[in-house]
Image 1 (tube, protein in one colour):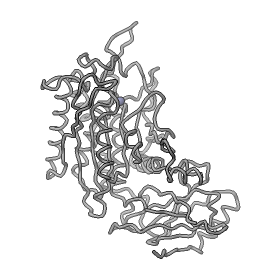
Image 2: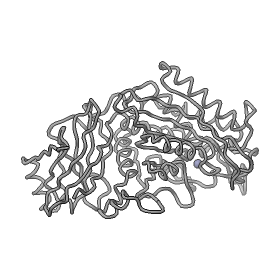
Image 3: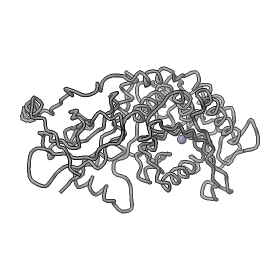
Image 4: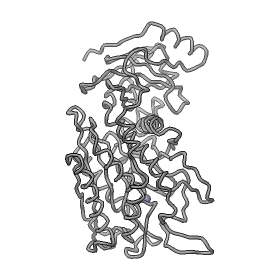
Amino acid sequence: MKHRIATRSSLFLLTAILAARAGAVPASEPASGPDLQRHQPQIDQIVSHISPQRIEGYIRKLVGFKTRHTMSDTVSDTEGIGAARRWIKAELERCGAADGGRLQVAFDSHISPVSARISKPTEVVNVVATLPGTQPASAARMYVVSGHYDSRNSDIMDASGAAPGANDDASGTAAVMEMACVMARHHFDATLVFMTVAGEEQGLLGATHWAEQASARKLDIAGMFTNDIIGSSHDEHGKIDNTQVRLFAEGLPVQKENSATVRTLVQTGGENDSLSRQLARAVKAAGERYVPGFKVNIIQRRDRYLRGGDHMPFLERGYAALRFTEPAEDFSHQHQDLRTENGKVYGDLPQFDDFDYIARVARVNAAALASLALAPAAPRQVQVRTAQLENDTALLWQPNAEPDLAGYRVVWRATDAPDWQGAQFVGKVTGYRVPLSKDNYYFGVQAVDQDGNVSPASYPVPLR
Ligand SMILES: [Zn+2]
């Protein structure tokens, strides 16, 4: 197709050149187009409805099942993982019914064969609540948020001993349930999937099963985040930090052989512009805008040392996926038998959770999900022209299909900067020439709708 390349030869050009000469990063704000700083009233409403009291109620109920070990009792109505999953499903159905039953709640089950952490074939059941997108051009695009409802104590194979799992991961499960209940009353362009999964502790079994099916069906999962251990604002010395959450974001995907995408990232210095890093920037922007005073601390790695989580099966299938975790973990309250030693209490009990803190993390998640699901898709096939040596940067992309698209925004940053520093709204075009050198800056292109909802940035690959 023939691209329409717009060029601003006006004031922007002049200020950009002057700033670049002075060694500063030229930051230009849109002269026209939607107001990108405006809060969406719908997102403010969602954030304000997320309730620490309800989150506490969910966590205490989950802890009340005594253990939610993946191989625990499935028959009892009061104890074990079977009772837990039936209760989660019933709660989500109750919430969904409140607004015309648009929230589709279902079990997603498979039999996991014997493996290192599974001693007998075991039914692993995820509880999945889907809120279909309402814009035909966006409904196939999905965002997935998860927490794992299974738990464990010191012995990974102990299926009957107490394993309250109040933080790991009733906190994430409760946050996902609360988001589903609050957000089911709203409409989004894209589809949201609220998922509580099992088998995490036995080897990411539930999430892997769902991600595998999604990949086989070629589902368009534009972003996934897991919430795992988001329950406490206290570190192991009792110091409180309730002002931030860690967001783990992988750079280059781990693969046996580098794909063409990975090779291009390496060749062009785009290691920090993988799909997950672009998603993380979008999550940070939305989270910090709607939850003021709370920091989304992007950690530029897949996960903590010696640990893993339910975002990994998604990463391994090429999807953008992130992990939320509290700022400083206290390992005496994770994967521990309940006991007291020398006056110190071990075990993952609700008394070590901070419900206000969990609500804050849930608000960041919800603001990011809502913002992403209201925004257009990230622009496709973004390219940077490299046919000749020149000091301008010519960017090209394919047009978006959403009917409420207002246009595109070109963003840039210095090569050693973590986040975007300059931006220009460029209107409804499929190309733009920026008077800055592609050798000295990283660029991205975002899609913007008429309400000012902005997509994550797409990284331009070289067009020769
Ligand atoms: Zn966990």
